[in-house]
Image (cartoon, rainbow, N blue to C red):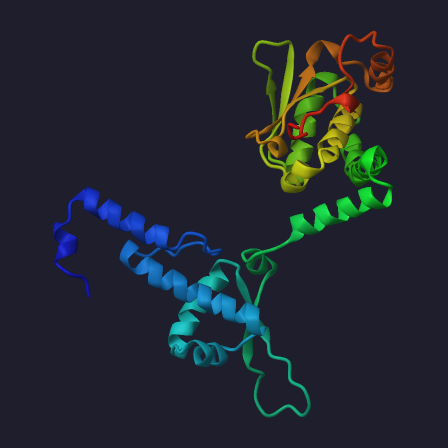
Length: 291
């Protein structure tokens, strides 16, 4: 029951109380419900308990959850409805082993992939450990770094082939925008725009799915830079990376260096001889953490 105090609080006091309620739910993996601030903490906490119980015990009926958590089945079903709407759980028919009784099997609720992702995962740690194993198996040191670089190039090769098909026959001046669209389809949230104060464009990636791993293994960023150079038919320069602590991965593409699609290997040959007057993308240290 609401008290009279809610009607007499100043706006600042109400904001302060709401902020405290939100802070109490910080660190919880599931999004808050659309309830008044005074009710949100309790509702959110109970909903997390329901999801956690399914994680710990596997697919569960509403009756199972009610018994474990000391709630009524009506209360559990209300929380399950919210979790269903949020895509955290999904209903399934309960598996029956042995002779099945009369009637339909009970409905159980299981976590979706999205629901599991809301809890702690170790994908970044697994990827980093795998790359460390590759480096160690190659002998460590420069050999180890080279092995990781080989893996990074092989990893992005499939993406590069798909991007090349999408950029085929695209006019040179439109390739950066076409590449940004292709990257966006893969979750990089990329855009292309004119570079401020320079004759060229900036390819900006506002999200990086491998940023945490790339913090330790910048070869992932460097292999991507090489692919951009090959796809765009010109040398490019990495100005910033999310893995290095920047807000956006930014790549500069000189506009004056665009060349016809059929002659895309020329800039790479020029870089090798030094006649292009620019640094080869393979020597870029963008993404490497300071020593």
